[in-house]
Image 1 (spheres, rainbow, N blue to C red):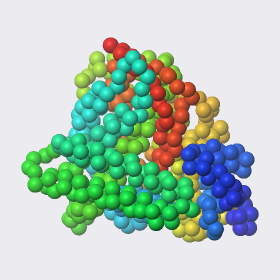
Image 2: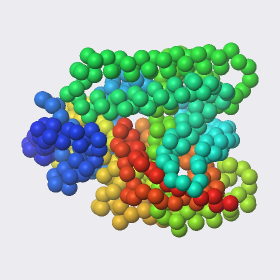
Image 3: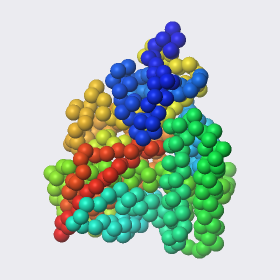
Image 4: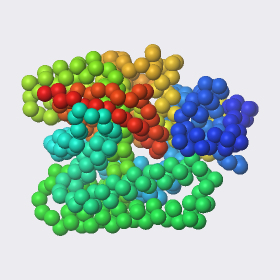
Length: 444
């Protein structure tokens, strides 16, 4: 039996009918289809083109782990995203990805990350000074700047001009918005190309590459150890003893900007919003902070012992996963639970739906950090905040260190008060918050 007879379809005309709503937020459209059609359905997106949307955690685990050699990332990442950020770890495939992963992995080992903790902590404290007390404010810009500054200071532990930082941040965010338009309005891609809109954003990317090459060259001419990621990347060697060439190094840095700051700023904002709505959780974190800081002034001690803070962050990433979709394409025909997947099937897995699926989670829409006291949950097939398998996010430890330290610094200084309800979302390439209006009151 063919796959079309096994999987229900959503027509191209229905897709067009809801195109404007999908551009703003595709999740309600997909949720309705999942609820109506089941855990997998086919969406027609054009003549002869379709995508399989899936919230079956078992199939995701099958594609990411059990049969991962038969699955590759889709054209969206390997081509569409790559044209803006290059062929780094996130967008590379095959032997090139394996070679780069093996080279870069040591830079993100916990032992190496210890060298960055002080830089991360100083950056967090400096950026939190932008929080104003006593009046409602949108907290996302604060965390967005905090996360970008943390990434850039962790890569380049040197003084960089504000103009360069602003340019790099603007390009990272502008190209993401452009890519979202291209993906959600594929029927307008011809116009984006003809009008010069695509070229404008490619030119922004080229400008960022020029800035990064200048910074890398400056580092090569400097003396001493800077204890940052750039030092580690410049010293890393392939098996044949050679090092990354300049273009590949810039590709990897662009990927770190795109993946490293966006997901963290989103998660910190959602965590902050959840804490504002759950004062008891704030109190528990505040008590935990007093305890761990009375024991040591070492940031690594705080990270290792802020157990409840970590539970809160994990629950936040369950409810609002930054990477809310993952895509894969099967290289050869595959079968899963009687479903035949022809060669070249485009699969789009909804992490957002999996993380809220009532088959997998008790009270799935409720904020319950204590559920993660069960260690098995974190490593189950139903929880994918950083992906899974060989391509699990290389920066997961970096992100967790940064988020734990940021929440510690935030809750130690401020009481967070809810001002807007419910929590609003803006799904782009990652799951972004929208109108994250909160109020902060000095705790000390």
